[in-house]
Length: 146
Length: 273
Image (tube, rainbow over all chains, first blue to last red; front, side):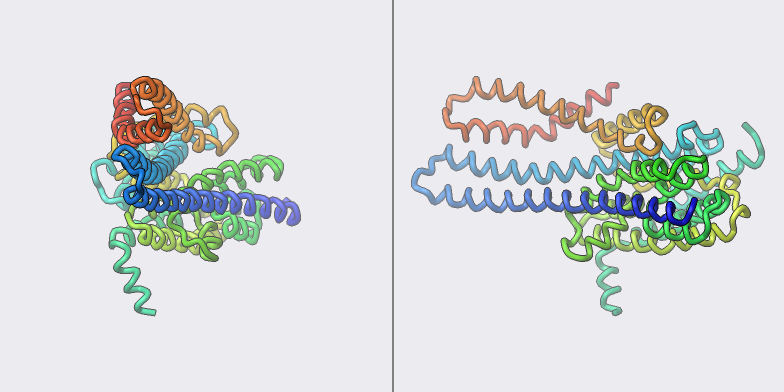
């Protein structure tokens, strides 16, 4: 690649990537802040409703319940975004374990990752899982079995 | 200065430091192989270095180098790299809530990647998450380009395949989410998401596969909307209170409480698959 076309490609990749990262941060923060503000607003509205003249048991509880459920919904949104992160990391794990580009990886890597994952499920410390998996993978490749 | 470290000691548990070290060692190993592959593919050292410093996302850089080495046009390499890095948008959304919203967010956003996100998730308070993220992010920001440089220098001496390095990265990622997979809901969602992404990876452009796992949430959302529509119909028929607020809050209350049982329903359905 000529230096110029490399620098242009680098700029495009870096700026594009950074834009995605930063946009995600801003959006995530906005969702969290909006949820907190809504919680505060409905909490104070609920307090006003108790003191108000037209407060019946029925008109109190809807406001409080709404406050609670909207507070719940912020926690819910965060919980689900958290789950989304786990699912995404899981998918990256699976696709890098199984694929080499778009072809399936060689058996050595598949078995190596399988051993490492099994060790992790069996509560083996992370470093040992990694070394075990790498060792099995390298071992299979070096000895040429499979 | 020492008080800063004491503060960090109290905020982060010891296990986080251990995780960061282990992940960093793995990152160095992967960086070595990246540098070697880059050198063998014909990139001069300064290109490898700049790419490592400014993209700071291992998978994307491997993809970029891979496309160029295979003879692809630069624009394809950029698009492929951007696709691979697109998951960082979702990661950004996950950490946005605990990022301090000032100039630090500008720098910290650059440090968002699989590992810094995964490590930040292993602790529970917002402050701890921020510190864990910074620690891992800083380690990667320093060691990834450095490792790439050493790898470039060592060049073809390193045979990544022989060392089994390509198995290390997925294992690390699994270890970091293993704790979260104890929840049945999360486990089912992850399994389905993984199946979707594995099935679609051969069909889609390089790098897009992992992000498709998020489509599992579309199904969840559809299931919920159907459920709330059904409830609204039942709720509207049963409610004698004419006020709209009463109706709405009644439904909100039920959907708030049912969130957990609704999720368990999904759980049972997916568990039976």
